[in-house]
Length: 319
Length: 292
Image (tube, rainbow over the protein chains, first blue to last red):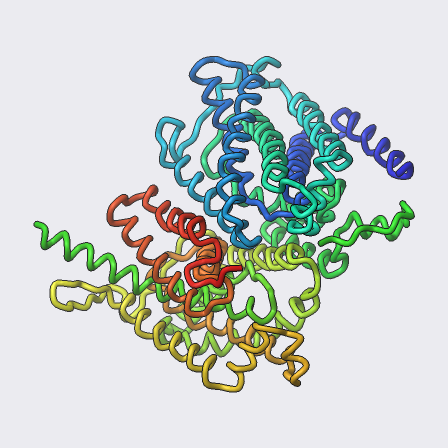
């Protein structure tokens, strides 16, 4: 355990001073990397620790984005408050949809697809509901101020996003060491066995989903503030959740650090090859993803661990 | 008035069924591959998109009609499917299912962006001999491409069911889908059958893709959506149930067609997803799925 804190401290200090030493246009890219760290960690709470393939998260991103923006545009309510309200709306949405899906005892794949179905429905509704901007979306007029989560430069957004990403990592670490985390691990390994020893799997999964939804929605609010506008396909963004799951899985499925490692590895690689081979970059990206999976089928985090042989505990097999 | 409404309804139903056969065939590819490899191929729809773009290429270079090139594309896709299976999927069959899904998503990136590089982001369509033609049956007006897709698609589906039921290969497929270990014990070469089925499924997409050419506008990024529809069909029919998959394809086609008729526009697109969600909530194992 001890071995992990030294590299963590190094990474932290690099992240803390990064905007001071790097070119301005990199800061926005790094901010988006941190945003995806937040989303990947949030997804990991239910998807990785709980072991279910859940595609509801674009709805949560959308809830955070639309609720805070509508409250700000219509009532002048601070996006900070909007973020909390949006988070609660997302949690409620998660609990309602989760309750429907969990109760009917769906097999894993059907569950995954039904969540994807809900997300598509949400995206279509968002793009046809004129009150929230329809397919055009909503604009936020630039008006810098901390209260409005708007900053003169990208550095402001960077630090706010950094704080939220760290919060998501901290929440994941806390959950993985708490009773909730152990219940989730038990459900992931064998749901029937977990229920047999008295774990209320529906309640546990709903709790994890609510927490995951809240954090994801907070990211949705941040995303809107960074971009300055939302439209249905970037808010209820299905590609984003596919990427998020890819980061979490490539990094190390079912682990705490996998999503962080995966996002920090894949996103900058994606940006780099885009700069070098524009056009071809996503093809190369796909090749890299396939190569990583063939090479390290248990994820990069596990692979690094074996190479450095940090931590002498035998690793738990992934169910 | 009531009579015209009736005709419009029947027409929408018929069109839904005709498109539904195509959805059923797309799902059947997923069902076949899943039944004997437990592999979920998220690049399924992208291979179909690839087939359609190969048609575009053949049209541009040689002036070939998509209906003429469909056999050629299928002949090309069978060995390609075998190659993809042998090089990529065979090696990860034992890995965690999410890993395998990610691998196929890697392929999605490669195919979609490869198409984008090769053909640009513009919407494309290819003229065919049947494109604007219509067939009148009584008061019903059927579009010729839909009718052709229905006839050829149904024939393909019947041929598949016949293969499954009456040939040695079909018996081997059913045996492996029921019990892999048992199939190995009685001496079946599981790997060989897996290779054949995967190549066959990709080859099937090579046939189905060209049939869809006159029915949809092509974009490099349509693959994931086609995959999603295939998966919805696959799950809604009852995982691993071949007949259920075809039935689910028809249900989805009809839902889409009626959604367009009665709601229309963007919101009408919700109907197929809504039907899918409802079906699974009422019958978690799918339309014809056995209770687990």
